[in-house]
Image (cartoon, rainbow, N blue to C red; front, side, top):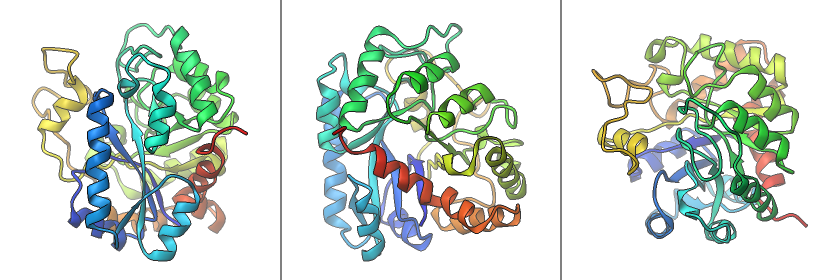
Length: 324
């Protein structure tokens, strides 16, 4: 079983076919960065059209059982998530509505302070807001996973401890291995995993040691060492693959509508676009490289199978359903 904890590709029939060639059974797809509720609904509509156009390649994922349906029918199950709470605007009632529409993950922040928590680019981290605590409670109730991939340390630790259900960091790496602002310190990873949560390892070059020159061996050794510290059961892959996106999309991701200036974020003023992917992971057909690399580290068969998808599957099964 192969499950990718996050992608934001420029979707096309080509990519849907590559998902099948790579044996990817399920993916968590970003369908909102800064969109409001109505704009997010339009993104759901676009995906419904793709499900109609390519029924032999992809299907909508709502529950863990849909991963099994996809596997049995030779398709990829697509699960939806938001990288920002903007789709719920300032209305806690929309948490249940977006879950009903098909959302299964929602980040409480995207780099900046939000109505719910503090993003990883802010100078001061004040933790979860009053609304944030209420929204986490509501997300727990309906089965919408709390994702803290772009959140600051205190906010993430508070979310992990406050949440009555495990939370996720769907796409990041250990800060000690690659000290990007977006990567996670030991105290953060420990808080998430000790409370049953998941960390998905990213192959986005700005999150990698040596960036685009990161080696497969180095990436997989990092995963093996992380497994030793926190347990392999809490780890998965979240590639953060942005395949075929134009560089203008980076501006939308980082700036949205909150600034008149260009925010280069993890890039640089001289190269503000998407960085080249490492040679061993260009697209979804390369998942086998990661699997082989993990085996070479000495991780056992069950640990590798869990990291490649089994752990995400278990997490989906436990956390997408409403609390009884």
